[in-house]
Image 1 (cartoon, rainbow, N blue to C red):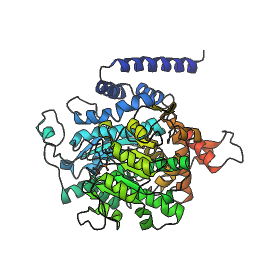
Image 2: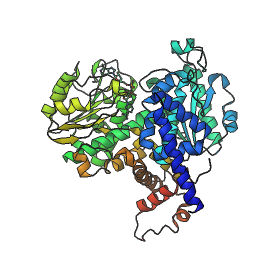
Image 3: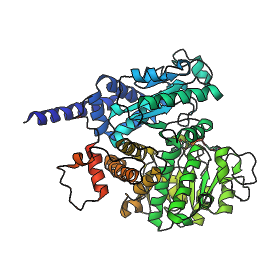
Length: 526
Ligand code: NAI
């Protein structure tokens, strides 16, 4: 046996033993802690475990377990590897970045902890989200871990329970707001650009009142995006486009009703409008008219005077409707998307109304976690006699109908942002907004017709690395062709000796390049 073969066999045994130990942990939170301790104490083994068992491990390092971990972050002693920048440290952000142990950082995931998942203000405990998303970049799309930095801007918290909790390690004061808040973020962005000029910045779990504003302010200053807005929009559009591949209908003929008009919903609406503009020659406003929104006060319409800024582009000249059922009966949607966090709001009456209007109703209850989902897969299958095309935010088990096995699709942002981000890193992309449409269209094309028939609107998550490679290739190719990014200096050198046919397309070259740049814990130095 060669030294390399012996080493590989030893790695396999260690990973198998570590997985066995992990499975014996009594709770998911214990598994989260065990993994985070392993990450601190034995990074090579941790990353081998993560990459060899991605599907099994992700629910412990990310949703759903990460929600509880963020709630109890300091009380349970999570080993933090991200960087806290506190409002009280203003004036020193650049120094703190320069003192951070990793200096080749290319991706930063930042939160201010104000709206963590559907759990509200978790203050400095939001660090768990920045760290979890950072791990997804490596697990799903092979971004090397030393290139990713999780950051929490600790600007205080309005969570009274945390303020009273003796274990809480964040700033013990109400959230900094207004001008003082703006100054914290402005100093952070300026320091980041001075430290790593080509960095990609991901805004994560900011509240509505800051998320849209920060994106508008900073998207022209550095390469940045908000996953709750743009990543969600992308995976949801991909789900709709996949469903339309199954029905043969055109996006231009859809009426899409959203239950909920927050960050996720209006982000999806805007990307659908962009898609209609690019693919079907509509104006952006015509595209937006395909999207109708319900919020807690009823249908968003031009007669309303109480609408927040982000809802106004979708306030069309339609009659007011108070309830979801009324809106379905009036507006006759072909697609129903739930982003309201109102568990059970897609009642059997609502689902039956969609089934009466459409041969193949497209129904997407995206609210997370499972306890907030607008309906279950089983309820959607039962109310539509198995005709539903379904994708949810949280996972549901498959079910049987009429002798057939039907599978729910999960609209998981992890299909999108790690790959889009890796493409941005490889090409030093300067502006990322337009890339999400490319990612959605590429993802929508990856399921086979047989998979679509069984309900799999997305490829199986077990194939995530292959899926990411395809997405990285499509996005990087687009970035370079449109001048948003540059061809990497080592592009030709990296492909030498790879025996690609002379007729290989650009995308094939990019796939080979992406594969060569995927992090491998067996060869990388950690
Ligand atoms: P948000 O807080 O920005 O928006 C929630 C919206 O729901 C608000 O417009 C609110 O007015 C509306 N709403 C509340 N009660 C309502 C009612 N009774 N009837 C109608 N509308 C009502 O939250 P965000 O960020 O838009 O997220 C919404 C949900 O989507 C969350 O549960 C989140 O976990 C989920 N989500 C799922 C993703 C995925 O599956 N890939 C990704 C991002 C978010």
